[in-house]
Image (cartoon, rainbow, N blue to C red; front, side):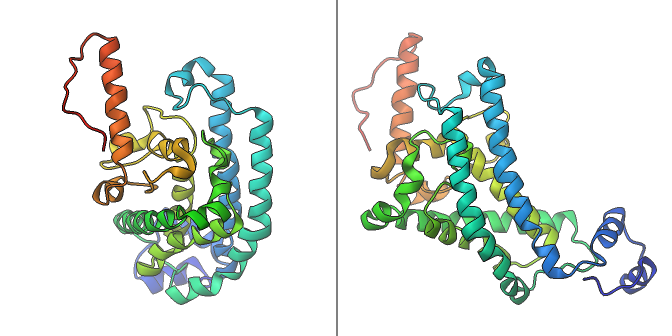
Length: 296
């Protein structure tokens, strides 16, 4: 809850007039506790987990001719029934496991110092903190993901997520409840290291959810923002990890590709891409084979 009784009192405390965004924030949050503001993450994650995958599903069924060239595994089509079934399983885990954890996790948000007060952060502050969050999430998630491919952990926990060798949007959070909890840790680690405003925190959760759904969408559209971000992974990159399945020791990173490159866990993926490129060139009559190319 903001410690100001009026807009005038807030402006006096800050020493300047409030921006339009700050006025809107004041009017919306003035009578809400910080806990209620924090709990906005629950409907936010629910809506994004529902609407973003639904967007890809509608594209597939309403504009099949447009999306067909961008489907990563064109021979596999997941039925509407299977999509709906997956969604119900995901929502069951969300409401029975994730929501209670989120409701009980507010003391940690207080402890790390995420604020709801005025003034609002500048755009540069938001961007710089989001960049830090993405880097921390990516690096931490990479090593947790590798851990989950150890035989016992994979067979008893991570195998659930790999049920779909050709993932779709609703399968983003289709995972064992333990995995949902463990993979949530990196999302809170960045804000814990570089705490900011609640707006930044909620925006971070939204962007991370959208990014994760895109990775599992099964479509590598040319207009995705990741096409313009250096060292960025994406649907085609992560799809290979699911395509290989339980034996996969490749493409663990969720956001960028540098971890896989540095630690050598993208060699199979890069080799396969070269082979596919060569096959395409052969079909176009533009490729002359070289004998020294070896599998990595």
